[in-house]
Image 1 (tube, helix red, strand yellow):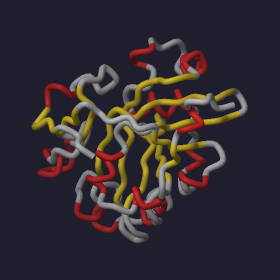
Image 2 (tube, one colour):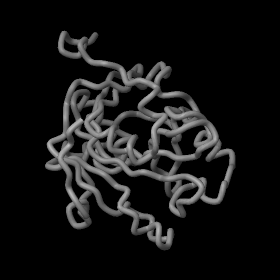
Image 3 (cartoon, one colour):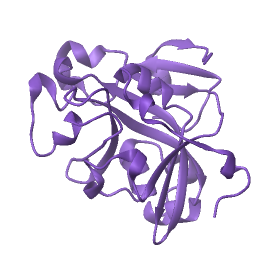
Length: 217
């Protein structure tokens, strides 16, 4: 049951996800992801994202128009969930952006735990709170997000919910994405965004800052 404070939260709208991938990646910072599953409810505030810019981005799974069973959700309308397995172990949560046929997506890299921390800790085998939801694989594990949700729409999902509560990040930093060294010149694109200051971000975020900007909207 939602508290009185939570009852004032606003669900996110489809229009947010129909914008360009970089705008969405920054706009999602500070938003809240809630998962409600039989074993309980968990929630995080998004603190770090990465933008993957479709067919022209060498770091994107849809680069060059690559369309496979795994990447098919990326070609759906903005707001679709794209979840894939990394290294055969970790699930990675992405939100598709733009119009249908434009395979861009935002990877959710990290979040700040809000509640359901005991459940998240069990799912993460006792990881300390400052590492529970830092890194995309850790975040998915803590929230209980399965691979089977890929291709479903975030805004009509029965177990995943997205909210806005009026929070505005003090500032947003921008830097290179993590783990995309194979992408040639696109490996250097500053398309990772995170909240400053926040301790719930990838360990090397502050080493790759290119600029910080005040969030005014």
